[in-house]
Length: 328
Image 1: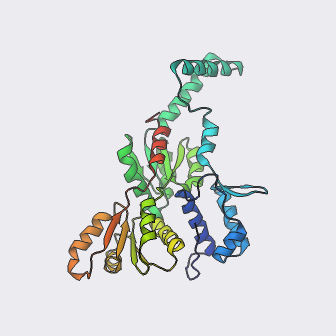
Image 2: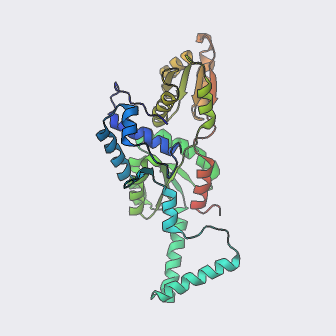
Image 3: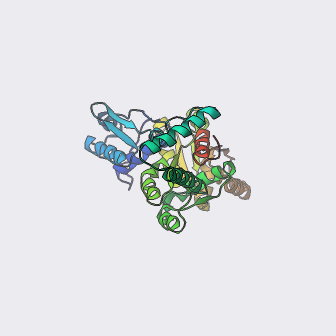
C-alpha cells in the first residue's frame, strides 16, 4: 500500500495521511496485528517530515486505531480481540453438560466472592437484560459530512438483520441515546473511538464493521490500459477520497480519474461523457443508468459500468449477527 500526498490540496498533509491509513486499515489492506511502515519509510514515500508522520501515528494511537510497542514499531490494533478478551473466555462449541458445568462454576465463583444467591440472580438478570437491550435495534452512525457511508452500511445490514436499522448522524446520536438508550451503535473503524465513549456513557455497545476488500474492483483497475479514464461514483465522500488515494497508489498517473456524487447531475454527466470505465456503489447505479438513458444521444461512447457487489465484508456481517444475538 502506497500513500500519496496532494501538495496542492486544501486538506492538510497530516489529515490526508491520517485518512489514507485509516482506510487501509478499514479495508484490511493493513489487517489487525500488521506492523505499519516506519516514519522513515513513510517520509521517503510521501515527502513529509518525520515529525509530521509521528504526529499522525500519535493521533491514530490516541484514537485507538493502532498501538505502539516500544522498540518494535506501530501495529494495527486488534479491536475485536480486545473485546473478546474483556467479554469472553471461550467461544468453542460446548455440549449441554459443558454449559451446565460453566453455569454452576460461575454461580459458585460469585458465591465464593461474597454474593448472596439473590445478588447472583440479579447479576445474571442484569447481564441478560443488557444484551437484549443492545439487540433491540441497530443505529448506524457516521458524521453528517459522510452520512453516505452510514447509508451504505445500513443498506447491507437491513436484509441480514431482523431488528430495526436506523441511520443517525454522529452529531445527533447523543440526543437519540438520551431519549432511548437501547440498541447497538455500528460505525466504520474511522469513527469507533468517539462512539465507543458515547455508547459506554449510555450503556449500549459500539461496534465497528470492516469494509469489503474490493478485490474484484482492484483487479479490474490493475488491468486497465494506460491512458484510460476511470469514473468513481458513490454516495459516500469518504469512499471517493479513498478511491483517489488507492488508484493513485496502484497506477500513479497512468489513469485519468474522475469522481462524482450521483446526486450532482452536472458532475455525473461530465463523468459519464469522459469515462471509459465507471465503478459505483449500488445506490448510485439507478441514477447512472437513468442519466445514460436520458443523455444517450450526447455520448460518443457508452462507458462500461461496474457496480461493487458489497460494501461490507461477509465476515463482519456474520460477526455483528453474533454480537446482537441473532446467531451462535
